[in-house]
Image 1 (cartoon, helix red, strand yellow):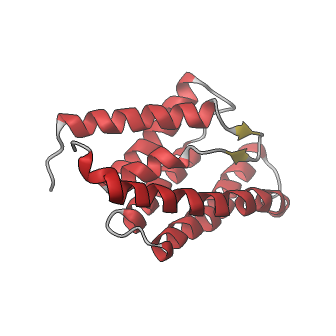
Image 2: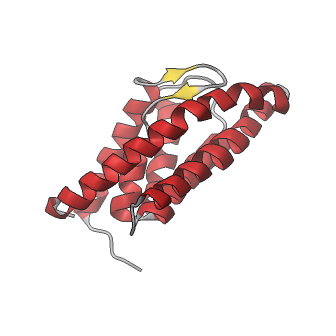
Image 3: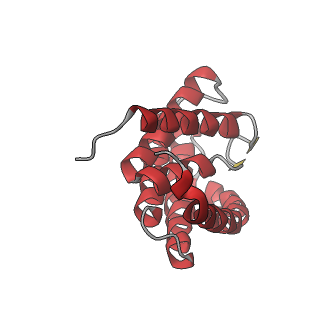
Length: 168
């Protein structure tokens, strides 16, 4: 078990705060769609600190964001999906950040977690038909998938190049 330092806690706190700001204030939100860049601090946490830390950043960001700046009713399923998203980014991108790793992270995140699991949570929460929601949410995945791929490739390259300068 790796010992966590105060410096790492501070980094994770800043990444959590950044996730909340990007998610709650700088995203396009509708009751069934969300398009934004709140995945960036979660992926950065996964690349720098690993899957568990990224999962905690994502889950805390979702929970605190829902409590402090609610968009709709709180539903714990979304927090679970957020944790799994961070876990996914950390598992795929902690050691290697090549195109195949990024593609795997984006595919699992967009297809399994966002499209299938979050659609299930929206269906349960609002009582909507799963199939009808799935059809509308494919648009979100079609937009965010390529965006996430490009942004995560660039973030991975930047961290590979400049990450050693960070006092972790």
